[in-house]
Length: 257
Image (cartoon, rainbow, N blue to C red; front, side, top):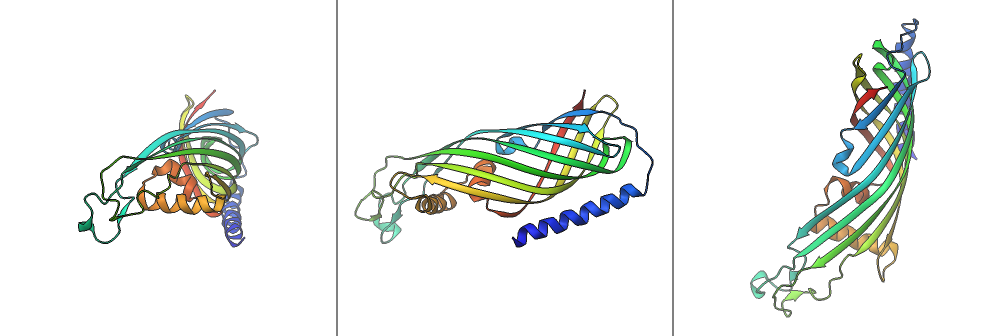
């Protein structure tokens, strides 16, 4: 709750600053473009594919709606799962190699209202503040496979008792926040939109792992992945994300029509 209050306080402060800035120039700015389609240039890093539509709805304001599809297949490997039971010199091969593959899919939708505090050639070209809300769902299927190796079972710690962390993760999330940014547009309609700001997000996770409760599976998966694998920005965002204050930002390329 404290995190949400902090995000709201920051949002109100930034919003008040933009309201004051707009009030300094009461003249009505021209409309450079009525509508824009945008594609994110930064979401691809985490396996997201976003399409946004912004529409001018007032002299200084616009509304934006974003639909995001999530699709990513990733893999990683480790050579350090099993441990020697006494000392490294007691085992011919103390390490157990394993591979981890993940398939990630999901969706997000976001709605936002923008208020431009200063424009260049006309709305929506210039500095703005944006209040937004978002909701989404993600599903992850993970498959771990131990490789066959030769080792001394008398000196390797629990190598034969390790459980492969095959599991599925169902994640739902929502959030709200405020961004400030600048949108640069040319007369032809081509442009760039850069933004950054604080947000508050809520996340619920449900793990499914054979013979384990959701809580037990989360502990096992968390320990194994944190100690043995590098998940990458896509999977890491879902496994390590928690409810509370966060931030958002990005870069989009836009085209007017």
